[in-house]
Every structure is written in structure tokens, then in C-alpha cells.
Length: 559
Image (tube, rainbow, N blue to C red; front, side, top):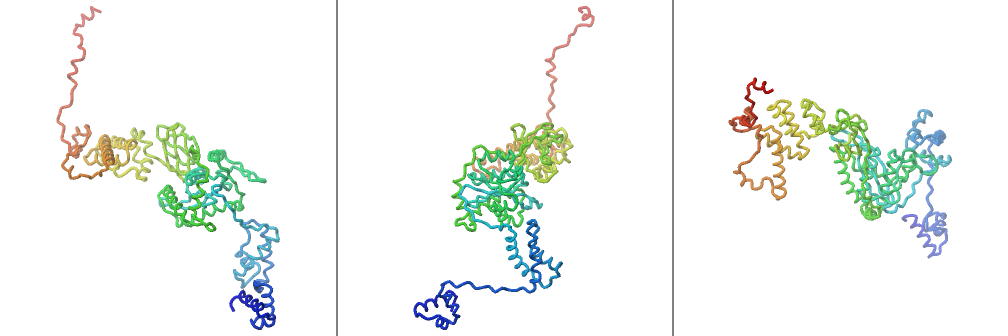
């Protein structure tokens, strides 16, 4: 015979068809009469009784274990006994021997639930929720580690999770301060194309909540800038309860942080910048649209396609998420923002500037004009210096350039290239250290009106003919820019019809000053000596008024 269900069905069929007695049915099927009576009473077999298993080695210690579990009723949640700790105490305090961890664990699991009910402790249970599309979202921060430019660094990942579709937007920032909190919202709203219409759930982040007001309800003392931000986008916050209870109230965002960290940020990503990482994150988010969350019929992307049109449209006016500051520029042409120094143009020394401190950028304004942009430095007491901010000063103090921090950081960032180094070395050899450095600075000033590729092309062209003049670099850079523009407009490549132009004489513009040089540099440049005499202004003396030829005594008599 197969299962007990089939046995019961056979007994009931024989009783119905053959009209047999209980004794005869028991004899036919080889079972006890009690089983026949159970089958005739119900087609569903009764559950089997589990035998009560004894644990003679644990029995002497059950009272001690119960005492530990009852003491946990008054203990903090994170300082309650685990099965491992109970076993260790039994060995240390009760001289228990021969106990296995699994025996203690199974007893603790059953007894803890019973003792919690006896003590009136609330049993935690999860209740499935329904979320209408386009109405709710959750926000949270999570810590992530990134190998940035070869250095393992801790950063903070902002997550906005739509409750209906499970669509999540992730961004990594150097900090979780208010500017990162607001920047994350701005980028997330832009990514999903709208704002939830009902509310967004938060825990009590200091970026939004200045103080939790104790008492009934969820009242919070919110910061003014946060109130301004949510008023601008037109949504209401839902503040979760403090502690572990609040984490359960926004489990979607909590889970999204962990899932994304385990599946996309393990092992630690190695990137050159946070911008590179956040661009990669956008690619991962798009791929996650094909994932199906447990309990959902559709994929994330399919549910989000239905949810997106129901979001509130974005406001027309953009919101600046940066923290507004007004530091003063010190004598080193630097401002201090959150214990980090950033350079600004030297002509602003002694003045106050307006700073928009953002999650990953520092924007500096003089009035309405943007005068400096820096990537945000996460390390305290750090500094970020741009060489261009000091060029006007260095023109009068060329000796300060070789050992300057600005030059060191420009070299490290690859802004001060090998072409710049070669021009500087050649210029100092011809013009001397001071004047040679001034020529370099004039070349660096060209970067303000030309692209780096154009200036470097100009440097290479000037050095190829032995010129170390900034004027020559400027002319050759403009010629390169014009040639590139013509090639782009005409759709031709730079080497098109190369054979036709091989015989054409290349025209180059050189400095008149360089032409008159008689030192070896003129020979290097391939310039013929200029034998013309220097210009004279002697002929112009005839135009000057003639002096009086009167005798001195005549002058005296007339006076």
C-alpha cells in the first residue's frame, strides 16, 4: 500500500461497496481496528504524534537555562544570551560536560519563545503590505568600501526605493551630510522622472531631523533647509520609529542597500573617481530592471513602466542642493570649507566668496560668476590647489613656481604634461630661469581660451622649429584649431590627400624677436641671420624746433 491517504480511501471504498464490518476491514487491510475507525470517520488521516524525545544530559541544566532566558526579559536587545553563550556559561558555572551545541540551540529556540510569551514580551511578526503605484518610496544610507585610485576608502551609498515596483536608485558620495542627502534626492527624482505622490519613508537622519519630539505620534523638529526642499518638490515625509522598530517600517530600502552591495559592490570596485563609479551604477540599475522580486508577478522594469506615469511631475525650477557658505579668501588664495582648503583665483584675496558645497563638488562664485570648481575632498585637513588660479601672481614671482603645491598637484593630475615640461626646460635654457618661466606662464594662460589639445599641439609645433616663444605657441595653436575645425566641417580626415600636399611648402609663423637672435637658438630654429641695420630716428631731429642763436648780451639787453 502506498500513502495513508490511499489506505484510507481503500478502506472507505470497501466499506461502501462490500458493506464489511470493522473487524473484516481490519483483517483485509492488515491494520488495527482503530485505524479503520479513523478512516471511516474522515478521509484525512490524523497527524502522526511525534515521540517526546528525552535528553538526559540536558535535563539537569534546563532550570539554569530557563533562568538565563528569564533574565533576558529585562536585558537590552543586543545583550541577551545566545545559545553559544548559554553553553559557555553551563560549562563554566555548572561544570556541564557532554553537551552539544545543537542540543542547547534546539532547546533555547523553543523555550525562549515560550518564556517571552510568559513575560508579556511582544512577538515580532511581519505583515505583507500592498503599495499603490506611484505613491510611496523609502530612502536610506548604507556604508560601502571602494578602492579609489588605489586606496581603500569608506563612502556612503544613498538609496531611493519605490515601494510598488521595487525600482531603486543608488548613488555613492563621500559623506552622508545634508548636501549629499539632498543631492541624492535630486538625482533619484531625475532618474525616475517624478516624485511619489503620498510620502517617502525615512529614519531619523540628522540631515532632515533636528530633534525627535517624544510622545504620541511621529512629530519631528525638521531643519529649515529640509522643509524648503520637500516643499519645493511637493512631497510629505513619513518618519519611522526610532530603533529597530523603525528599520522594520522601511525594510524595502534596507534590503535594497544590502542586495546591491552584495551583488554589485562585491568585490570592492576599483575606480579612478566616484563619477566613474556612479556611471557604472547606472548601468547596473538598468540591468536590474530585468530582475523579478520574490512575490512579484512582473519584473522591476515592467512594474516601473506602469508606475512612472503616476508619479508627480518634477518642478520646472531646479533646486540647488548645495550648502551655501561665505568663506573669506586668505593670503594663500584659498578658502576653508569643512576643514579642507580649496584654491580660488588670486585676485579674490581678502574678499568673501559664495560657496555651494555639494555631495561631490565644491562650487565657488564671485557674485553670480562661477570662478572655481573642485571635486570634494573627503579627508579632513586636506587641500585642493589649481595651478591656473596663481598664474598672474607667478608671472611676477616666477621663482615660486618650481616648488609650489599647485605645480605638484598639476603634475599628479596629468594637467602639466611632458610637453609643458619640455617647453619650460627649453625656455629656461634660452631666456634664463625667470624670463623662461614667464614664457611658460604665458603658455599656460592660453588654456583659458583654448583646449588642452590645441595648446599642446602649439607647443609641439613651436619646439619642432626651436622656438620658445609663447607668441609662436599661440599662433600654432590657433592654426591647429582652425585646421581641425575645417576637417570636421568638411568631413575629411587630417591625412586626406597627403600625397597631394607633400610638395606644398609648409608656412610657419615665427617670432620677430626670435628672428633677430644671433645666439645658437637662431641656428637651431633654422633662421637666417638678419644683417639689416637697426632703425634710426635721427632724420626726425629735423622736425624739432631750432634753438635761438641770439648772443647772451643781446638777450640781457632785451630783458
